[in-house]
Structures are given as C-alpha cells and as structure tokens.
Amino acid sequence: MKRTMYFILFTGLMLLVLSSCAAPKTAQPTVAPVTPVASPSTPAAVPPISEAIEKTFDEIEDAKAAKKKSDLAHVQNVVNMRKVQLQNLYRQESLTTPFQGAMQIKLFINEAGNAHNSEVIVTSGNFTQEFISSVQNEMANWRFLVRSPLTYTFTIQFVKS
Image 1 (cartoon, rainbow, N blue to C red):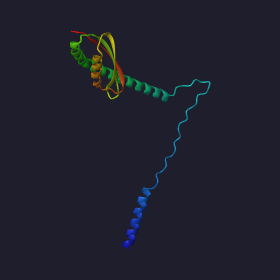
Image 2: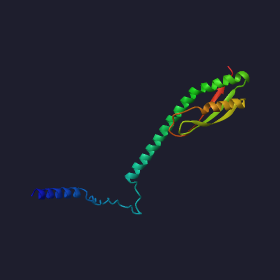
Image 3: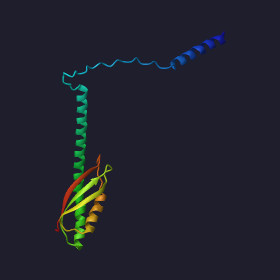
C-alpha cells in the first residue's frame, strides 16, 4: 500500500513537471489596422508617423549640432590656454634669430582628441623652418575632449616684445 502511494505521488509529480515543460502556447496573430490608401484624385496626406520620424531626425540633428558647438567651444578654450606655449617657443627661438609675423594654424583633431596633424600657413613675416616644425611638434602633444573628429583653425601673432 505504501509503495502504491509513493508510485502515485511520483507519477503525479512527473506529470506536473512535464506539463510545465511543454511547448509554449503560440500567440494569437493580431490584425494590423488597415490604413486607407489615398486615391489618385486626392492629394497624399503625410501620416502622423512620418511627422514623428521627421521630428525625431530633426532632434537628432539638433543634438549633433549642439555637441559639435560644445566641442568647438572646448577646443577654442584649450587653444587659448595653450597659445602661451607657442609664445614661449617664439621667445626662445627669437633670441638667436630675430623674426616676427603671424601664422594661421589648422588643427585636425581625431575622435580620440589628439591633434595628430596640423597645417601651418605663414600669413605675414618670416619664420624659420625649425620654428614651424617646433610649433607643429608642440601642438602634436595637445589633447582635447571631443566626441567626434573636427578641424579647428586659429591665427596667432608673434611679435618681438
């Protein structure tokens, strides 16, 4: 008798376990609402979803523009602080060879914030190639906190004081 009770209890538990492991029920298919198709005689109206998508794309573009503006402001602040380094280079170089003038410098900043490349254009005055190279080497060590690559151009005056 005891053995029979254990057998019935064991069989019941096995059925319970197996029924819980059965394949999941399939979901009932839902019917999508039918949207009327515009007839050729009536102008096509912009569906609300398209307007929402356009608004979302506009918001994304606005956010990108705000980030770029923020990145440019950061780069401008860093460059303004770092111009002192370039002026110090000028003071050292001009002790041995007197020169003065202005440079337009274009920084190419990658997504990691490194000024990996720079373009130096002498807009006035005469500069030695060694000085131009030392300016480029100094700027190669500059780092910026940017979210995407950008190009920043600035002008610096070097005047004998």
